[in-house]
Length: 279
Length: 84
Image 1: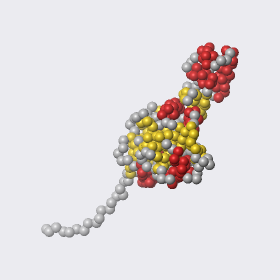
Image 2 (image 1 turned 180 degrees about the vertical axis):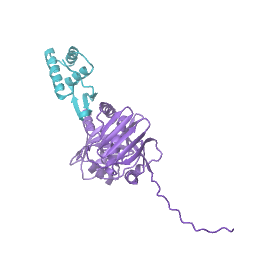
Image 3 (image 1 turned 90 degrees about the horizontal axis):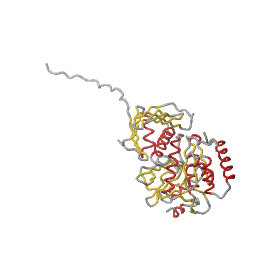
Image 4 (image 1 turned 30 degrees about the vertical axis):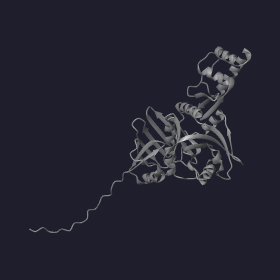
């Protein structure tokens, strides 16, 4: 019998299971995040898109969405053997520092994911001889210069003036320092303040660190080691309250003071002419 | 003299001063001169006699004064919560 043409009904497709992934590299640390919840992956892609790095080895985190709670607001860090736990009201993470495997439960918000990444990256930087610092950072002649200051010291003002004068700003709020092959390098930062820029990956040899002060006229002066250390420690971003963290802080700070030139910069907010003093 | 430094503290001599970091309280203390000398003596487990001798070798003061300085400073450390 001749074949009969049969009308086929189009097959109804079952909703595809969503499995989103994003690979990031921040300050040389690889983070691969995977989730079946679209919202959180979209936020990560939107917020840290410039720092995407597929297939970079490092941490592999399964991410799920948790309720958004304000308390406690300050992150807490506990290291037991190779198991690192980071948490605050709106996120909870558990990572194995040896295998890189871990889980993150976090509220689907940029603020929460930012807090998680700041906690993790600051912890790692300290252990790699570096720091996460409240500072403005900019690039001049291929070198990075950091400007230390707490809120109100002028980090954003200085960054905006530098950007307007054509300098590349690494971040106007939080900069990442690593110690590699006997030298300090500043790394691209996704953590910004008022300027709310995205930042970009990259790293630059550290040319110097300045203690920041606003003034009517620009001026550069020497500063004593003790004075530099005190401000450096005040500007440190660190949530790890362990004795080991304190020990590493002093060890890394001591090395930074020995290897990098510290000076005091007073700048006028009239224009970016203070850049001429940065060498 | 009862002066045993808390194990959880980190300290280091940087730029001629001793900096002590108490991470659990997010506090930093700064010591210079005699205070730094005494702190390092206590940290090294030196006896009262040895610390007084170290002070005398560094500063031109009487032994009685050095001993009193040591005693006062240890009391202060205790009040600040830096001793066990």
